[in-house]
Image 1: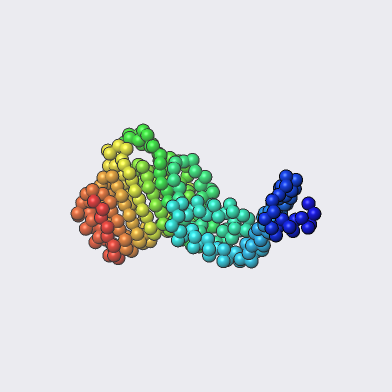
Image 2 (image 1 turned 90 degrees about the vertical axis):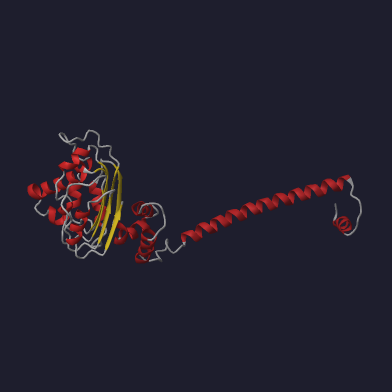
Length: 300
């Protein structure tokens, strides 16, 4: 088809011959293929541009100082509504890239909280390194016990698996936590823990008890007594084994009341007791020995 005939067809309603129809279809198909090739080339060029733009991002050019990244991480980890524990969030941040890991390691504020959930064995050396990255900032350690504690009885009490795994050494080696949360399946685990720390104090490290005394906030939860009779074997000064001077906040949840001495913490400002029935005299005696107390919560 020559140029003149093409102009006639585009400027009139002339009918097409069979040869003209085939010619026009070939031309349309050829141009459609060319458009497809060009569109594919355009996609490739757009993808390459996005790659180059990502490589020129502020993070890749070290345009964001480590201090600013650290502030962002701190805001995200400590004030996040994320259901993930803060320590798991920190682990994910460190896996993004080397720059983020370096920024995280240079930010003590995000290393001060750690939650241990499950049952031993636990690598306490790794936990110690984690908490040491908080520098001089306060530390919070949560231990949520999921051990079965089968076979505990009064005559042959089984040592708490956390004690056997080395928890006493972790709690008495600097840096020690300021806030400690112990949620144990068996209440006698706390007594085992205190006995082990006392043994460290007398036999191996005279400063063990002094480091333990740095704990200011304690939350202790015992879900059950595997053998209720074993609760009577606990020391009467169970809770007063903690520092009387440094303790400022205490929360105790027990399956049943123990015959333990009343509390004597002169600097205690917050006290929470969770039990069906706390003896009135015990509570009043504890209040009399806690003159700084401002908040008292009793959950029946």
